[in-house]
Image (cartoon, rainbow, N blue to C red; front, top):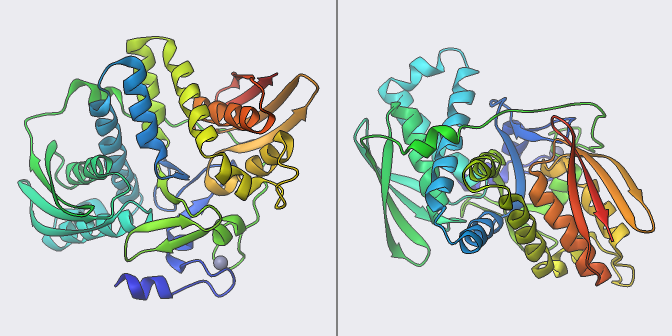
Length: 368
Ligand SMILES: [Zn+2]
């Protein structure tokens, strides 16, 4: 089926038509699904979330994987709730045999579209259990969390899962009804905050509505369930920033104010490790003018196309740069990326201080 869907492409920009039909890019720098109003999405390198979780665990000396798991399964459930509430009658349809099984199929299809994996069901028994085969996942733990969340939407009761590796990057995920959810789960419910002032600069395809930068850079492989950034050759995926937003919120409450600093350092290190990719996608093509200002301007220019926020002003000075972004997908992660860019390109240390100007709007002050 995916081969056919993949062949149906926009004749103007070449993106698979289903992307423009399923997703929307907003004027305020965010993106999401057309049928799901509340859940924001962001396009990021597929290894980022795993890197953040490992880094936080190491820095804190505490396991946080269970927190991440609950945040991802909550988001997976919310996406479906949001989507079905917007289609009259669909919550009722979901309770019928055919509606139930179609919803499960939709979940597997969506996991391929957003670059998570190629997945299909082996068995599905309502209010009891399911077995899925998952191939080529961007991260098998987080993919399992998405499966658990989808089940919880289907049946309205808590699920847990078991995992078995059955081949090279191939797994079976068995989801079974569980007695209840961990306490942390409820606290990880997401909050929706959006502001919209200056509309983002976003050049979209007039036929399918996909931003030009996305059409040029991303290559969808729906058969294998992955997306590649053509310029860097790196696997990317659509993530819900609500996962890290709610996770950091809870961690700050429990573990204190050291969390933002750890998150910023994590993204700074990740950026330094990936400096070659930043230079090849945002630098001067000759490699001679890969200076901070050029690379940062080009990096921020594509923010709205990737759902990362809407940069509304940039001021470059002798000892300070200030960037204001509306609806940043997550302020610590952006601060860390900017710090990594400065330090990697200028070979000098700097400090980046996110400053909340108002709900949903942050200034990033880079001092050097
Ligand atoms: Zn198009």
